[in-house]
Image (cartoon, rainbow over all chains, first blue to last red; front, side):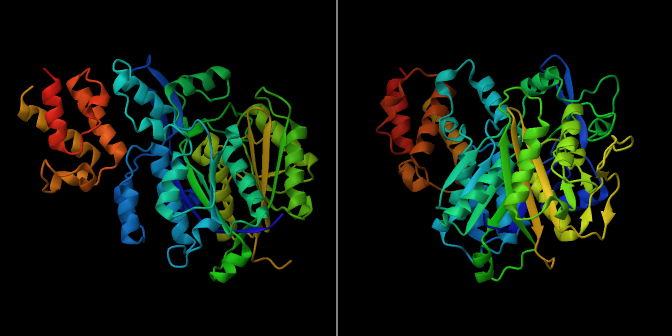
Length: 419
Length: 80
């Protein structure tokens, strides 16, 4: 499969809006976990990493955009919170890729969205509003209820006419979107694929259900929300939800060279496997298979990987399974961190935002510390508690696994290394 | 509801749909399409106004409305 370059990316996270702020937060291990309350619903309280405030119109003023794009971007109405954030991410990626100055033909660009069932709170709010007056339900709901509304908005804003669709994969959704985007290049139809991952907007029902499943960490009696997400730590007790949005622009080498881009990182391998298991328990064999497939497709050996961005949700069984799978895949003794320890679990958007964290670390030559790693699990891997600076990553492995036995793995290559 | 109250309701719903119009001069006779509204916006204006009035008037009665004046006249005729 083709090696495709990363020409641009954009991010909106609880720890920073824009990739430069995201980068600073990763370096400093700056997190933003808080208590999420639903007073209308029986005083329920959960931990979460929320985006403090997001005002698209005022953020658009700070971006270097053609004026008509700026105006248009601020005028989309009846879009979900995730779509608003995704607009910002897509614009940031487009600017970084220099696409306003040297464009690619519209029909040679595709857009793939990662995530299904992402607009849960948005839908709940609408239903609550119209419960007593169903016949007046806003006609715009018929348009924005689909997960591909974000494709519609972004393709209109940026003039993308190749093809567009959304990809589901539970907590591996947006990583699966990158896998499918990677495969799209094999058709020869596209010079670029924009991969978008809007946040999944959880309502109280999902918080409650994940908690009752035992998958989500709980506040307990006076627990500090920032201490709860502990990937690969012996005190790990489940994931903490984080509102994350990201966008990656992948481009063929040929197109990037024609447009005179100097990209530093490429997506050079991808792999995916299924466990044949409906339940949420992970599989060493399935995860290992996905990683091996990615490694093979990148045309490298497991030993060439010198950094792993783990799925690392802080699920006791999940963390254990991932470490064993890495061992089995021959990826051992290398630095590994979990970006979720800083930004929480984006669920459907985790794949893309963590791919962006991987790309940033490769470009800027650092490995961020994995927070709350005070009592690390025994392992052959080099679990990284504090940020390591001035370090070159040649090949990175980024993992994402989802309920229903869905496993994905991506290999990113540093284009500045001499092979 | 008086004609003025009805007009005021329609206008406030209109401004919710197209905020820029609040700062612009326009006549009640101007066609919706000239005000920058597409068919979805028009449908939303009708729905919002029906909702504001808690009205049972079937939507199909408004199919011919092409301007604010049309909408006003139809509402006044039907809401007896």
